[in-house]
Length: 111
Image 1 (cartoon, helix red, strand yellow):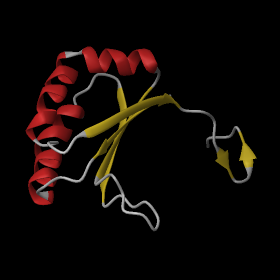
Image 2: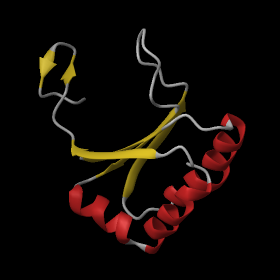
Image 3: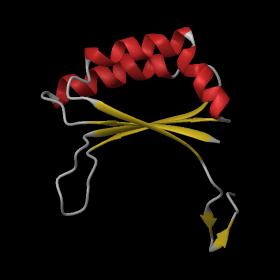
């Protein structure tokens, strides 16, 4: 699995940002070819420090090639073109391969 995480910096208008992200941008992202999962959240916290982020979006793909193909697709290009319409405070995008996790105290099991 390969993951893309978008970390959105605090917007000037939380209401406008939230509305556009949920009603316009995420439906564009949901059309990415070979997208396995899409999740998002608001109110990102950073412990006792102020968070540099307001919202997060997670996308999962089978592998890096699928992620890269999705970003290069017409759907990916449409989503990228939409970002300046609502993320005026900026967004940080990170991608990485997922490693086996810890489940029930065992290393390497993911189910």
